[in-house]
Image 1 (cartoon, rainbow, N blue to C red):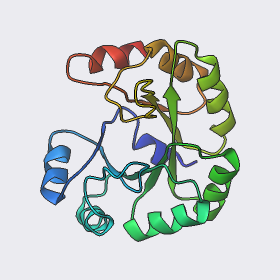
Image 2: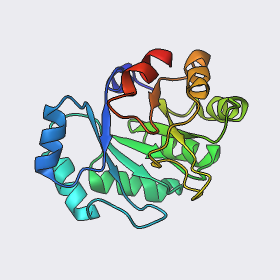
Image 3: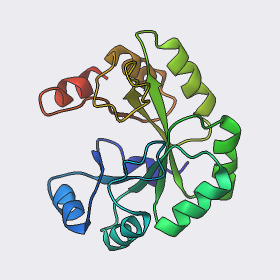
Image 4: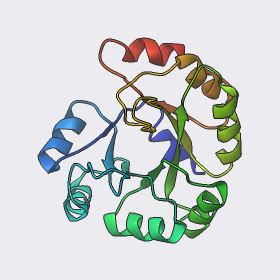
Length: 193
């Protein structure tokens, strides 16, 4: 883990779901410090094609550009990150510790964010996952499980913030808050975490 890479996310805002370069510039102009590009998702709901994403990423200013994906194969992920030109990969889904370790070995300079999906009030399972992945990743992002759809993250739903707070308090790696954040709750959630 390099300090500069982690510092790029400290007290910053990542906006995911960029549609084109104009939108990316607007988002950055509004104060975002990182851009997320969800691609190769379990349900096809990408905001732009892989070629369009690569073009936007290439034209973006030097901010963290994040591939958000549910893929786990280390070699495929490394090649995909290279092709897109991203600095970070945000890992969701059933990725294993061994897969993340292999990706870290293949691309040591690539920033790795591990999604921790909160499904209830008990922080123990989330903390156990964080402890397992902490030696391999640069930061965590806490997000929300939707019991109605089974979707793990990007649900627009909030989760018990005490779970995110427990991950922050453990001090294993920086934590990015996600899950139902909006102008009316983001400042309070950040203070409590």
